[in-house]
Length: 346
Image (cartoon, rainbow, N blue to C red):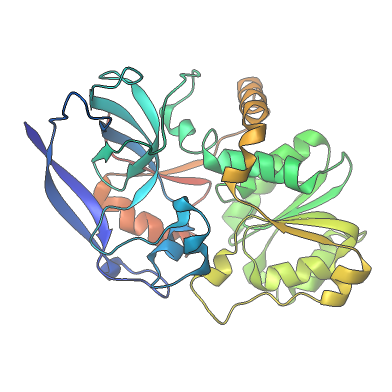
């Protein structure tokens, strides 16, 4: 027995901004037969995470590709793996039964044949929409919580700046910071997003960076007493401006540098004397580093969501065919909150 599996692949390596023409929708015949001794599991994909870091995997060369298995290069024509939620169709493994809901490394497609050793866990049903397990309970949520609390080591009352603050990770960082009792300002790329940050998510202030001619002055206006913590999602000129406004012993957590992913001319060059004399700490991190705080992250996040203190912001597209445009939209700032593709209805 077999099914038609529709999936997304890149035609060739992408070394600039992604375009629709870089992708193709392919169809394969996927056998639903798994040998009894096999550890493979066939999963019907339900929700898939769409993340900007994937562009670095699509390049012909990127230093990130050798850093960790999740960042390994994507081969043109092959299925693209991503974090997602699905339902087991076929399994002979004792830990996975037919119809179990699972989360792990699936593919940009309708079905995934998950090989032995690949990330796959039975889903703990927490009473929230399934999509939450791709976003707020997934790696985006863990990166926000762990990156803020474990990397930044914030204190109540400190002044926190978050770039790309309406994105999948930034919006959560700002909310966690407010719950701790920090003063929080976010940057975003539209007035609609600025309004969301201030009126819905409770940021103390926010600004549209596209309307600012001088980012250093914009941050000085928002932080007349300086920045203690900067959660960086964009790199480039914003990182330079934040460092210029940092207080002594300020901390910068570098979660992503999306402004630099598709433009080799956009490279951050912060004032090194500020870093030295203000004793600023700048630390990059990966969500995979943060599993030690996962239990705390999950319990606190569930508690905050149940009490209404935390809001999960999602931007959901429908169907495998929407994956290329959903991905491309990340680099245009189209998404508000976590970008997810709903592949199938339950």
